[in-house]
Image (cartoon, rainbow, N blue to C red; front, side, top):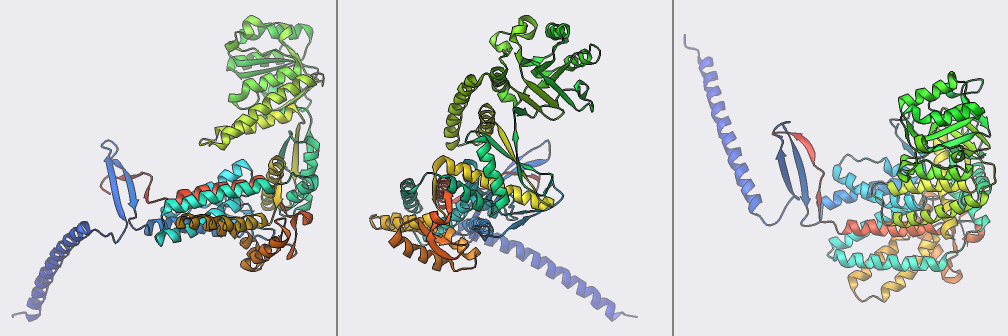
Length: 614
């Protein structure tokens, strides 16, 4: 019997196949046609994107470079700007005495989240999903990072200023302004602002430092009081470190003598009852700026110490396993009172640290580069003498007899000169962080040579509170140091508002319209930090700025708005002040980043490894 339904089904399948082939052929033809249209057109609908691929025959992978060029300066630059805005919006909520906190997710090295109010700490943790937006976020971070490296304070202000300049500048450039001329105006405004700051700055008095410490610490009275006590104990050249307290209260601990993070090379060298420390009174000290490789090289000094019953501390660059065994045997079998540690400090600065200890103990440093060695040149006269030494597995503390004060002061003057040179070099750029490391090392050396080291121990009830409180006290420490260096200015954004008014007068004297536009962009941006302070306190930012402008017109730039009391007052009398260095750095670094951003035309993304054929 003839199956009508089966025949219809077969015909349906044939027609479906024919239609599918025609559709596929049509799509391919249309795609080629559209591709030709897009290649031939002179106006880009989307940003042009190019890929350069280099095949790796051995690994089957290839490098891929992606280049974006915006002929109309819109899509890609807007993505960059979105990254800038996202970071600035987040950082802006932390500004001022009533600024909010931000929760940072759990770090790999921590089991608990962090609650912070520090702008640079927050910005460093921002990683956006869109790679182009993330580039923008990293650019704005650079403004805060540079300010943080120099002054340690004013990082949030730097990033908020830079973001506002970028936002305004991008709008006028999109409207047809020349980016170079706009940047020229921004540069003129920056230089005029720095000139005004120099005229307004006042030396930092003790009462100014009290208020700066209090405000920078987030009005932590106990923490700022402990910090100021530390400054009194170590003076201006001393080193202050922030540590953890075992209690819920803040306190200070002055470290007497010189302390290094170098412990004994073997626990068997300990001589205390609990076998955790090596302590000695009036020990001799041997200083060697070379590795001790052969145990035979130490025979002379060990024999001398054993025969005379002298306690001996050895400091050398490093020790071979055989040398460590030899020293340990001298202690365990020979009954000697001997201990050995590696030369203190970073490897690069072993020589300087050993020379410091040589002055303190009246010793001579053995150094093969200078023609002296332990094997050939040992004599008891090269050994130094210390008043007391305490060595643990984690650190060493040494005490001098106080008889070589003049030589130590001369050495301190030399370190101060080196520090000035390093800071000057740092201001010109430090791409790999080596200069910053050197500054940190030299500051510690200066602290040991002069006033010593004081630790501010911060107390808290929980680990989350501890981290947040330590960050605030570190901010206060940087703010006080900054004020000591360059003086103080009226705080609360009032100085920036006053400078803004003077820049408006400068703009009126400039003939070029686009340059004048750049000056006014910078002038308007200087009001942004004050507006953020007001908004975080629950007030209208524009109204507050207008109040400050009105009072400054009649009473001068010392007057401004106090966010704590919602009053327009003399900010110096009220204690609302900022360090001049932090404001200067905020202006310089925000202008620098904004100028670079506004001249961007294209982006080259970092090369990524992709599978061949992708």
